[in-house]
Structures are given as structure tokens and as C-alpha cells.
Length: 100
Image 1: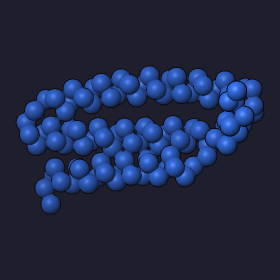
Image 2: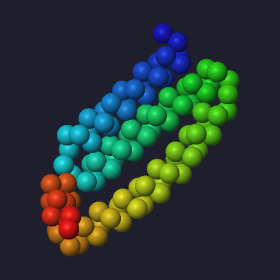
Image 3: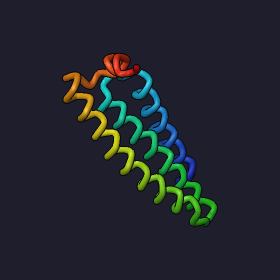
Image 4: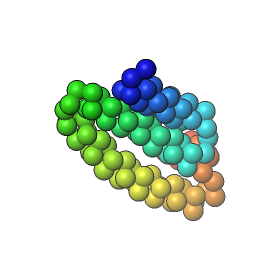
């Protein structure tokens, strides 16, 4: 197994574990961590393919994904903090009472 194939396999496993966590878990903080895991799996795949093809485009994508992930984490945690202050829970099922 080549390094590229191994890196793609690890990236796929990370992405699938993150997707499974998003679908199964009910805690918003765990869901946000699983989203970050999915983004990191995609980042690993981009870097592996960029290295395999000798192109820098994959690494540029990773840079932008990391910037978006940082903004997503900051905004997501701020929303979770506001929801927790109002409802005293971070359960996804409780968020159903937020719609108008």
C-alpha cells in the first residue's frame, strides 16, 4: 500500500467517523467536534492528493478549509453558549423548541 493510498484511507475513516458522530450524537458540542473531524479527514485527503500529483492546489484548499473551520468553531461555540444560557441544555432535541 502506498503512502497516498494509506493517507486517503485514513482520511476516509476520519470523515466517516465524523459523519457517524454527527448522525448519532445528540450533544451539540460533540456534533461540532465531529464536524471538525470530518473537515480534517477531507484536509488529509487534499494534502495526500496534492502530494501525489505534485500540485499545490490541494494545500491551498486546506488553508482555506482551516480558516473556515476556525470561524465555524467560534460562531458555533458562541451559539451553543447562548442556547445553554437560555435553556440550560446543549441537547439537539431541545433545539426543536427554538423554531417560531
